[in-house]
Image 1 (cartoon, helix red, strand yellow):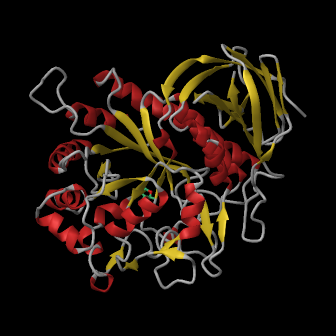
Image 2 (cartoon, rainbow, N blue to C red):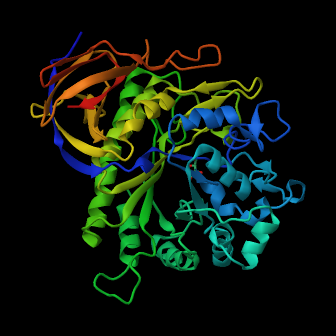
Image 3 (tube, rainbow, N blue to C red):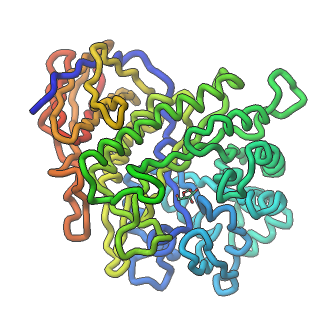
Length: 509
Ligand code: AHR
């Protein structure tokens, strides 16, 4: 069964805003087996590692060109005291990770280990500072410890701990979810605090911080409004207007309620469509926050950082409820591909996004087996891989003048096809998702303003939406060459099987 073909138009010579590579960013929290067992196994592990960092995880993530990694939380960030995580490991303070399972945190993975991980990955660190239970001084000294050169108390301490040169750190988060786990503040209270913390997070030498204020949950536009108001009084030169350069927002996709979010692998077709409808609301959410910001910042100098997004299901049976370990199916892959189309569409305002979380937690790229240590790449991983050519590419508008087929889901219309495109270095990349659970879909794209030469097409799909990868079936969901693409003159005809994600990339003539 197949719907009528969708007609689309892409003007390949009309470049839109650049898609920041940082929307392909990641997030690693001290939560469950993300850091310990995921990224970090310790130097005595049988698993090949460098300084305790798993090398197979590093290799897999390097293949994605991950642009940044957010750490140490999440909720954990607002009870993390960075000085507990430096110096000889045997002397580091032990704490209780009260948010996530009440387990002991021995602080063996701290600032030096995180920065070493970023160096191995070739990625930029994004550090989330503690506003909830930390002090202005503590945060200020962390910046000094990391980024200052020359001589000062924190520089001496860093050198004492084995690091001569300062690191480069650009992305700096001023707290996390300060409306909730990060301090239960009102927007007004946090907005004043954010100004203060931002002031004392200094730029040392040529290290320029990009400060990110802790933003709203979901559709709380009022929070964004209050933060924008605090950013400065338009026209008043006496107030620093760029205390922070971006505001974050968090939005998770769940099929049910927070009490019963739904099973990661066993779900009905109805639950699948509800999931896609919820994921698609990211477009509405970014439009809403961006509209509020436009009132204060029409030239879009302040960015949106969606530093937590992705699916959140009930934990896998038999696992610690505080560890947020979940499987990852073809449904998760389509949630990811849809999010990227939405981020590309909002490239003028969205400067960064971080999927939650990279290894063993929520919508992960990588799952590791706690017993055998086996590493599994999830369907979501493959979407990041197939889409990596969009990083820092110029977005291209995709028009569908005759419309896109929709389905009514929970009283709303869900578009069943999603497409985005970009160009970089003379190459075109088109990403297409068919969200229809059962029907195939053909898309005919009229490429105007330039021809396409040699191209490659890849497809990610599986027999069922519930298909997923395990140590015994590593490639149940993995990209394969796609034969269903034809180029006839300027027309690119793409066949999309039910629940599939396809990319077409090639040289622009
Ligand atoms: O990603 C898991 C948690 O979700 C984070 O710690 C928190 O910021 C959010 O509520």
